[in-house]
Image (cartoon, rainbow, N blue to C red; front, side, top):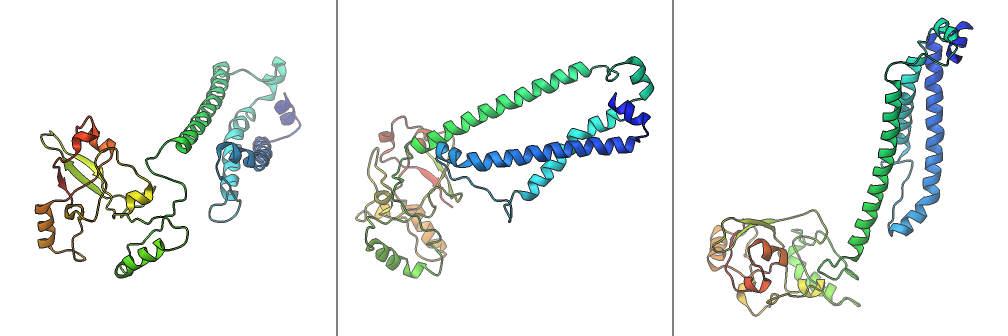
Length: 293
C-alpha cells in the first residue's frame, strides 16, 4: 500500500528503486558498524579463550577497510535489488482495490520457508565450524609432536653459499653462547613449507613409497629432544652415518661412489609402517633402495 500511495502521489519507479536500495545499504552499513564494534570488544576475550594472537587493522596492505566497503555494497545491493525491482512494479489500482498489502505471487510462501531454513542452516554450520576449530586448536597445543618444542630457536637460511665456508665456526660459536644447551642443523626447517622428497622401496615390497627427506647433522636429535623408539641416532665414529658428498655441486663420480657404498638412515614410526614393518624394530639393519636424486 505504501508503494501504491507513493505512486498515486507522483513517485516514479526510478525513485522507488533508489529509495529501497538506499535503505538496504544504510541497514547493512549500520549492521557492519555494530559487527566491527563487537569484534573490537570481544577479540581480546576470544584470543584468551583460543590462546591465539589474532588482530586486524583497517588500513594498509592487509587492511579491512576496502573489503568492508565492498561487502557493504555487495550485500546491500543484493539485499535491496529484489524488493526494489519487485515492489516498485506494483500497480496502485490492483493493490488499493484488493485492500491488501501486496498481490501474492505464486511460490512466495515456499521462497520464505527456504530462506528461513537456509538462514538457520548457515547459523548451525558456523557453530559447528567454530567448535571444530576450537577442538583442533586444543589438539595442536596438547598433542606430542615427537620433539621438544619449548626453548627452541630456529635460524633460517643458514645454508647460504656465502655462509658455507664459515658454517662450522658459526655453529661452534652459537653452541658456546650462554644458555645455549645444544645446536643442530637440518636442511629443512621445522614447521616450514620446504620439502625434499625421496622414493624408498623395502626389500620384497610391491611398490615404492615417497617420503620427505631431512638431512641432519650429529647434534640434530639431541637438540630437538627426539628419542629413539628403536635403534640409535647418528654418531661420528661410524662412517656409514655420514652421507656427505664432497663438492658443490658434487661430481658424478662422487655421487656414484656414495650410491654404491650406501649410508645409514633414521626413519620415523609412520615411515616404518608404510614400508611394511609392523614393529619399528623390524626395520633395524634392513637395506632400503632409495631414489635419492
